[in-house]
Amino acid sequence: MKVSRRVFLASGAGLSLSAIAAGLQMRLVEPENLEATEKTIPLSRLRKPLKALHLSDFHASPDVSYETIEAAVDQSLAMNPDLALLTGDYITSELLDPAEYQRILTKLSARMPTFACIGNHDGGRWAARTYGYPNFDKVADLLRTSGIEFLFNQKMEVHVRGERLTIVGLGDLWSEDCKPGQVLKAKRDTENPLLVLSHNPDSKSLLQKLDWDVLFCGHTHGGQLVIPLVDYRPFLPVKDKSFPEGLRQFDSKYVHITRGVGNLHGLRINCRPEISLLHLLPKSRPEPTFRSS
Image: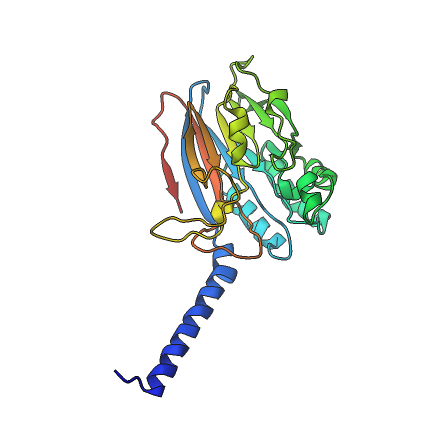
């Protein structure tokens, strides 16, 4: 069948417009289209329900503005969490306007106990080999001056709404700073629920023989690009591709991986940025459930 020049040009124009629309979607729309997800986790040592906010991978940079990060924080606060857990990559390569960043992060600590671990982009061996800081001093200072408890292979016992919790924050796996054996044991020495913050979900292999309840991670961004129908994520930066995002069972424990607020290179395709609220419930409550909005 002979195709007229007019039809050919119209088809080409249609394809070009589709490509432009797709490009605008992945650069201008989807990176700003936050998804709020809620999940429940039953914990045998918990006496009363708590709501834990999990945020990660802000990636403050020319690609992710402070306005985007503040919008995520404000939307998170509207969910009325009891505590906040931050799991690294607060910057991509350098800390710009720390006073403004501190103002935004203080919104969290002013409302609730807030705890944080470090990520590979925040400084250290991995960042020094790529395009970041040789150490994470600047990011650690930012977190501390924002009223956030920064934990680096450390643990804290805390009271949240009358509930006793143990929070552990680990160093980054890619920077060879993840040392769970320094703070966790094969059998815990407390009856508190034990929550672990570790940027990279691959670190779970180092924790397998240790005693804890929930591991909170970021790092994956959900892959940033998800091919629909087959759920293929070609850019997942982890060895274990079966843990890309969401709540997963790991032996008798749980791992929660949030897709994160920011991104690298300003792109997301079929993989919206995420703020996560975890309903921690006593074990007698129903098994885990999930919803998003």
